[in-house]
Image (cartoon, rainbow, N blue to C red; front, side, top):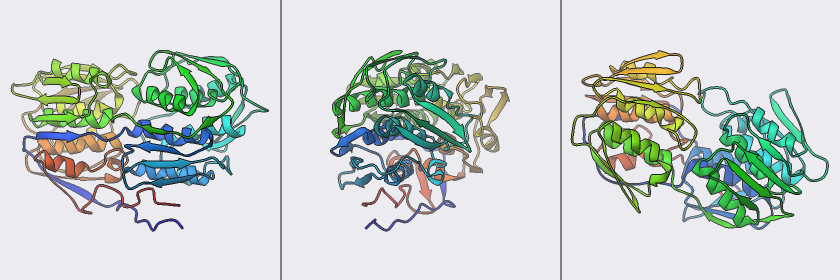
Amino acid sequence: MRADHTEVLLLSNMKIRGGRRLTGTVRVDGAKNAVSPIMLAAMLAESGESTIEDAPYLTDMDHLADVVRALGGTVERRSNGALVVDASHLTGTTVPYELARKLRASIWAAGPLLARTGQFHVPLPGGCNIGERPVDQHIKGFEALGATVSIEHGYVEGHVEGRLRGARVYFDLVSVGATINTMMAATLAEGVTVIENAAKEPEVVDLASYLNKMGACVRGAGTDIIRIEGVERLEGVTHTVIPDRIEAGTYMIAAAITRGDVYVERAIYNHLSSLCAKLREAGVTVEDDITGIRVSVDRELRAIDLKTLPHPGFPTDLQAQMLALLTTVPGTSIITETLFENRYMHVSELRRMGADVKIEGRTAIVEGVRELTSAQVNATDLRAAAALVLSGLAAEGETTVSGLEHLDRGYSRLTEKLRALGAHITRSDDTEIPLRLVGAN
């Protein structure tokens, strides 16, 4: 029997009394963007269960667990927090629309299904409304491997006769999603696949590490050329995911926006080098060691320019948080968003708090103000929610943030962690962890 579940309250809100300097130590959870593809890659295993250690408690994990279950697999959350996935007996190849519309990661089911069963039927991606998510590069990868792929009635459909065949794939643009999907599909293909212009993100490297533990042969992850030698079968294994660099970066920016002093435990400098560089450029003190990164401010900050780029460039998932910081920095800062066209939806809400930001196409011109003021604001996507919370921490008075269903997709125990750093923050539903935590089957 499946456990009883209670959904997170969509009408909950967060109240933040700003003006407190954050100090102390905060520990980063496992990476959401690493767990997501690994949960679906577990479907490549013909035998054995995969144990994913340090998986965060997030609504996205619930939704992905439902995707795996809909395809015939099982997912359990162990008492130590690990997720256990067993998809050795898949029974379906169609991802239901009502599940896929909740998160874009559902498209990653296509690669494992194609390799394992020879077909897939997956809705076009959902998730946050931050811009178009074309799947043309995913399709290019699958077709290069010998699959026939089409888009009909909002679904991407693919099939192959027999096994996929290794091939050389060149992506026209750097795509994390297409790199992940093609890499997963190629693990069971006949022959060698070479992916050129591949994404270099740490989460791609972590997925490759997991696949290799399963018995795959993936080389070059973390560079722009990945080579995969196909194998006959894969087996479930135990894997500990990397720390979440976006969560770590959010706490680093939280320290800066409150002019605080915070040690972010488990933050990995190599995963966050571009953020560290930009914070230092703005006058923030950033010190790293083998266990984390310390961020502190003891001087007036200065305006900077930044542009979002694929890794190792500045992450688009930290752009909103960085914009929030720069609204409090004297001078004119310029941000250019190159990856998503709708990633400034938080700006109108920041203006309600007194921010001075002008949008020209994909460029945000930020004039620092002397002080942000409290307001009632609503989050429209995951990282926008984080930006509004950070602004609330810096603002005068009490800020109310709604739209927390977005926040719960990417941040576990945020209220608890910020309180431990000295923030005055509460939630109306008294929890930021959804009560439906990947229950037992």
